[in-house]
Image 1: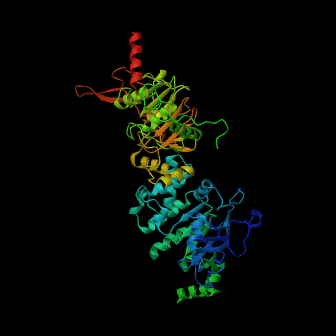
Image 2: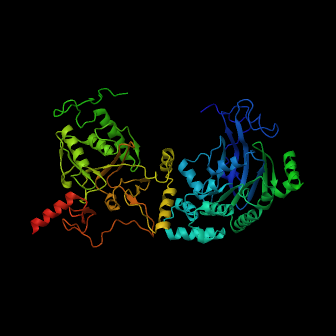
Image 3: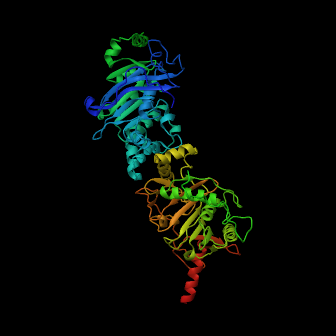
Length: 299
Length: 298
């Protein structure tokens, strides 16, 4: 390893389960993702104050810097910000598509001691990804396998959870697809032949197959037209009301954040610049960037 | 760092019968390297151990993996049987047997399953139940059972490492949805010791039940793909299947061997000189023994 900049600013230890507020399922502390060699100046020389994400000293890109937040069961956290602000990086680190450079994310599921997602061995990490966390990507191609049927895509998660009865698997897949309003007559069709909205609904069905504790939604509706967007958002709201699932919604669309999330964070240049109750942020933005964001939508 | 008194094996043990060639063709260090890989394979059932596949006087893809395992293991007193699709008399089997006879003169060869200490095979397991003192060696063309769903080697190795087999199961699910059953015939994937998915080499499904809790050691060698893997004795071997779509071997309802009359063996269609096709036992040694027994009873 290179002399990796342990970031210059303060550094918390992993929070023990008892120091986390009750009801929290995911406690993220100081999560930083660097692309490049890293140097002690990286975090000081980047961020919203200087309006850049590339360290002028070593050329490292700081994708997200010292991200800290708690996610409670049944709550929905929105992350809003311009493209390149690090929103998706946060989700990708949590889901395990990539790993952060430093930081801790403690998963607190029922009856289990807190587990740091970033230090689990690959086999356990995969179990968390299969059982505890579901992810819906911006483009269906990232979340679905186009070479297998829609039902097979949902079945993949169930098979990972060691379901070994075709009838039960098909019943469960049908139940999920039906709830997502995907016609059952198309269950054995290839997702490539589906409309964009239907592909996204299959993706949601797949993400929910094993009843995860946390659902990550990454720009889920960005590629859809407005009426289809509304349908998908309705479905997510139904899921929120029916279950105790914790959701993180990433979007550059303030309307989506307002509709779905109770609390929100605003990101810019890899940093969180403002956080709080969603309505409050949108009605009374404090940070200049949030003010710009809100005013550009309202005007 | 060699311990005091430790000596490397002589690099060459020349055979009297064939001057210029080492005993059992391969040089001693190569045999040692192959045995090392074999030991690792036995220690991790179903895991594919990479090894440096050697040049042999037969082409890669014609059983060089199995042959290297055989050559690395044989010694004085061993009795070797070589079969190809169940038959001892096919060209490939005969040539491999001749190579062993010429380069290892104190090793005898046989066609009789019960008499063999080492059985090298392509595509079949003998019908006769194998004993603990016998070693079964398989020639493997494609060792990677996940290759059908993933072409990148780095990715299949990661999948094995993390036991991330859901895509393999989805492939079977899709097969059932499309065809009403699992259509894989030869090389049907098995789960070894509850951990690794393994290709049993292109044996028919018929040959999979004997692998489960077998008394004998099974070794698999892929010469072209440079992999060795193993099923140690008394290991759990489960063909991948679903509770409501259980694994089933090939069935031959109402058919019997035209030569020995057996109804309990794996049959293969064989043409006669008139262009007619009839069923015979795939295992020629078993068939011959069966005929002999019936003749002596009559």
